[in-house]
Amino acid sequence: MNYSYEQNLISRGFPFVCGIDEAGRGPLAGPLVAGAVILDPSKNNFFDLINDSKLLKGAKRLAAYEQIVRGARCWAVGVASSFEIDKHGLSFANKIAMKRAWRHLPIKPDYILSDYMAKVYFETPFELIIDGDAKIISVAAASIIAKVFRDRMMEAFARRFPAYGFEEHKGYGTKKHMEKITQHGPCPIHRMSFAPLRSRLV
Image 1 (cartoon, one colour):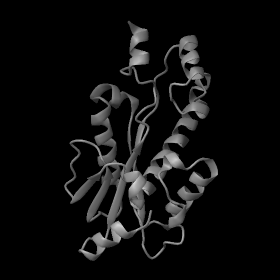
Image 2 (cartoon, rainbow, N blue to C red; image 1 turned 180 degrees about the vertical axis):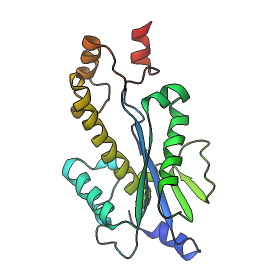
Image 3 (cartoon, rainbow, N blue to C red; image 1 turned 180 degrees about the horizontal axis):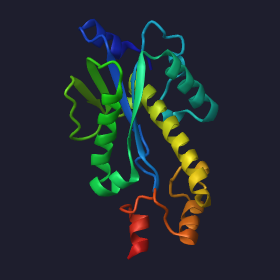
Image 4 (tube, helix red, strand yellow; image 1 turned 30 degrees about the vertical axis):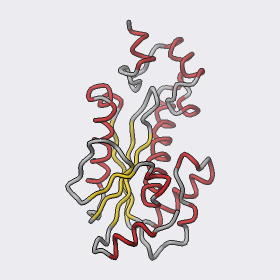
């Protein structure tokens, strides 16, 4: 993975190329978080640390995150809450988070590269790329920002709702998480529209 895709866009007159990706579609609890990143090609000494966040674990992901935060031209996140996911549905909430991340950027991008999601539209010129987080370095950087930011949100929720172990499973439907839901019932950040939780209300 390198910066060649973005460099081609820059040569075509789009100096600020933004990558956008999300984290947290699958969990039973917590928000969905989108990241938006405009990398700086003059500060590329850490680009080899960047990869799809799903392929980076622990210290490597955190190291990449810290370098992106310090070295990118700018970055932002957008959050859709569990309430918004239940109210609007997952796909629409995903679009809400991505649009919020884009709008929060202090530099408005000239071109957006986003991991593919059907019926996403940006007023800025954009391209939706299947498996973009595995192919495009700006999208991979956004995936890292989204993942680390969401993990930290779930660790904060773990302090607020200590019975569920959110610091360990980050809201995913692990066996331990399901046992805690059975024991304590859902809490305010659970996604009640998701089947495993919805079935418990019937």
